[in-house]
Length: 319
Image 1 (tube, one colour):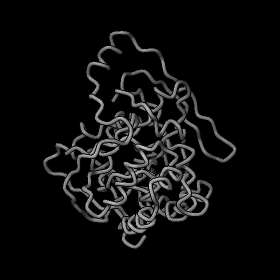
Image 2 (cartoon, helix red, strand yellow; image 1 turned 120 degrees about the horizontal axis):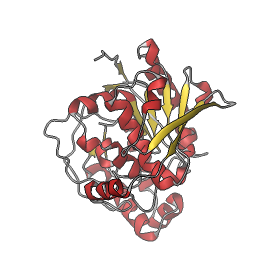
Image 3 (spheres, rainbow, N blue to C red; image 1 turned 90 degrees about the horizontal axis):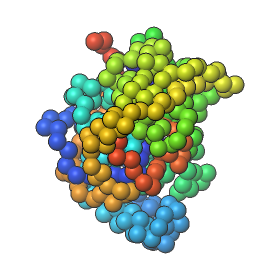
Image 4 (cartoon, rainbow, N blue to C red; image 1 turned 60 degrees about the horizontal axis):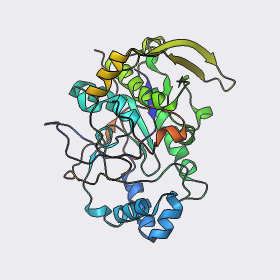
């Protein structure tokens, strides 16, 4: 399977997860994140509001998060992020084996943590990649570290699987220097209303993981959560990136009703879910990567209700 890069979500769900035994890990750059939070703690509520560009209630919420950082509980990234893309991903319904594969192949870009593996334990936070806590924005702060990580992760894979699937937003893609990557990049294009594209990005990740896609051609078999997406063409861009384009067909009323009926109830609206899980820790060993979409699509203000072979590992300590 390829390395996959994905953008995060603003909507969070920190209620307890239902996996009895889940081997979680700690973020690679957790120490750097803690130092960034120390800087955020120095800001008053008005300064937090200006930095994040949010309403007063959300500024107050995130101010309180920063102040209580040391005592905050944690939850695995893929279960804590709750936007449409992560509902499309559906990590809650994956098997432990699927989660293990995803841990090896998916990287979620983060303004605070740099990048996250799916099973990295995180605390509730909000810091977009474009925000200027550091000069030039968090993308410039993380770009060298993230680019090195992607190259090393892809380089550790079997030769035929050394490619990258990019579905990240423009905002989050900037935290990786695409021109400095040593391997082919396939960017997923999902034109049309963003409400459908958001969920489809997560569904694409699920397709890659659960179908064990090992070649670029395997991406073309993606059909979406409800058999509504079809591969159209590949377009080679001037940058050398290969755009893989899919179009969405209308689904029947019956399918649409089933989709709404079976969709999980929304567990948070924007940032508000604050129920914490006990803090856990894990190893620093893993592999992987993934991308999503357009900036405004990655952080929606209103949520959608939708929902082998031996792999190499590398140790990220010191990276």
